[in-house]
Length: 198
Image 1 (cartoon, rainbow, N blue to C red):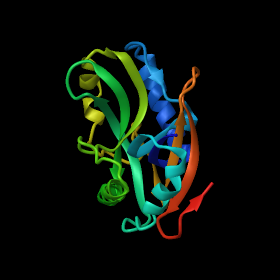
Image 2 (image 1 turned 120 degrees about the horizontal axis):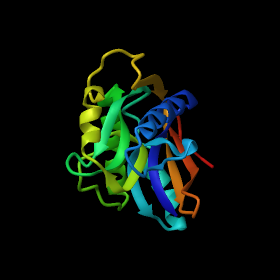
Image 3 (image 1 turned 60 degrees about the horizontal axis):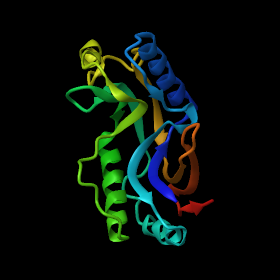
Image 4 (image 1 turned 45 degrees about the vertical axis):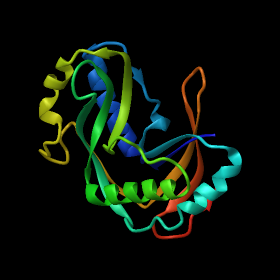
């Protein structure tokens, strides 16, 4: 199973991200492969291939992950990766109680490491991927949208999405298909109650 830990997004946040997508699409910057609305999420930790028999133990390893408790996030502005050269990932930034988000991510990372899954070499940068450009977009897309990145003007500004509560995280399976990835929830981990498996 190809697995990752993530935070699911409510419908109003997904609708907001689709509006951002539509805005960028009107600029005709280049060919982008957009994430399907139902696939939009906030990744905490990507695991890759995990044998089916190992999944219950992986879920058990997450049971102590509770310190963050319920917290609130908000999509904020635009983020483009990498930071230099042609843009390959178009995303929304993440604001709100980012300290609690980072605490949750560190706990998930540590629990995975204790269960035998390597720690990510790269630092974690929270973002909500909207689309990918295989051939890259021109670097001036960053300049065009610079004023939207990391500058909290007001909650109702065009590039700032609705706030949402995070009360759980999930383990998801990603199945690669010709029409795009299919995500299925394998287990849920409430931040104030025992975990539940599907």
